Image (cartoon, rainbow, N blue to C red; front, side, top):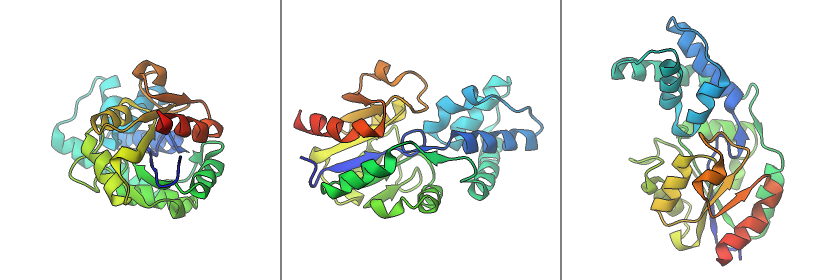
Length: 224
């Protein structure tokens, strides 16, 4: 069932618990620009939409709105700091490596489709020794479009050498769900991620509470 199937993973909040380092980078940027730090609960729901969205959400909670050029500058400051502090407290979610080994052993084609910049995604995955599992690693800047645009999912499948009719997307946010639905690709949600609302509310094709449930869930979705 899994041989030849393309399994796409979101990164932040799906594969890796990156929120501590992303929140720290956001707060570093705010303080650098004369603002107060904000709580994790403000930033975390925006993680799936990228650094710019995290900064915007944090500033909105402080009653601030930055002009586009200022927001661009702050995003670059965030990125520079985060690149140097990408693996301070970030860790894979439990069971991820075992799931990757199982999928690879069954002949699945694996890919990453993330709204993190590609260079940062590759740096993080390499530092955690996960980069060797994937046929493709696509970030928000790899193609002209990024999630929630379905082109991001479709282009990642093609980059991995897969077929959209034999693909499944795994993620934690509405950006992941919308991109998968737009591409007519089944979606499995993880309940332990950072989504702005409980993943069940989004009505994915399946929900998993841990990576131990992933392979059975994939079999069920592909069979359907």
